[in-house]
Length: 265
Image (cartoon, rainbow, N blue to C red; front, side, top):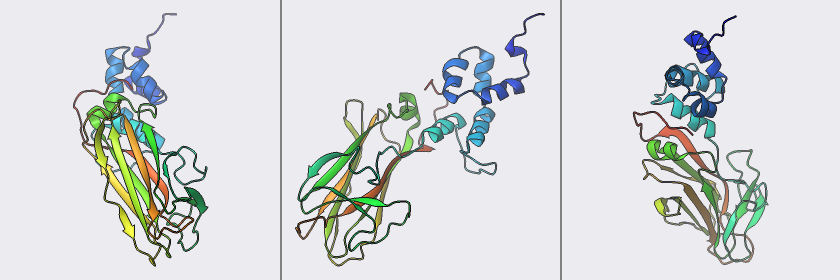
């Protein structure tokens, strides 16, 4: 019996086979095999079907997608890159930059003279004291699965969110700083709004702070996230701003759409 090349299979059958191959293996191992495989793996229909199969889009999806292959990878990697954002693991994963007053502490919602959080799944928060308390994380994007060409050529939006709240019976000052940095930690873009001061006898409402980095310079390899604050009454204990549910997410939305094919991840 004569051997038959897999390339003699109808193209729709080959596409069905490729549907079941992990995406990174498709680009690393399958795409370089021959021109036929390259052309099939570059088809929009293949990556759109993979997105549908993974639940990244629905059949009635009506938002424009400029590159379904890039869209697939960004969706597959999309998650909160900050660890322990809601204090469920005490202070784990956070670097303490300033630990003034009675130092950082973890408390359960709603807390004394506090209010409930908008998302009932969030149960805890970090709270500051009467002198400056700051904590931070540095995210290594390559270690998180993002490769250089994906970051530099497509510049996916980087969405930063944080939540803070005061105690009703004490004023406080909250601050946040987020920086996009190169491989050698040179700052390429920054979000550092003026500190927010809330006066005593407030409504203790939780406030969301958000910022989206778009069309930032090429070369981003790290993200530095830092937040914290202190109370304004200089009271012993934990009367400063409360923070929780922080997030840094690489969006599936891209700023740039190079016409040439994406390199291997």
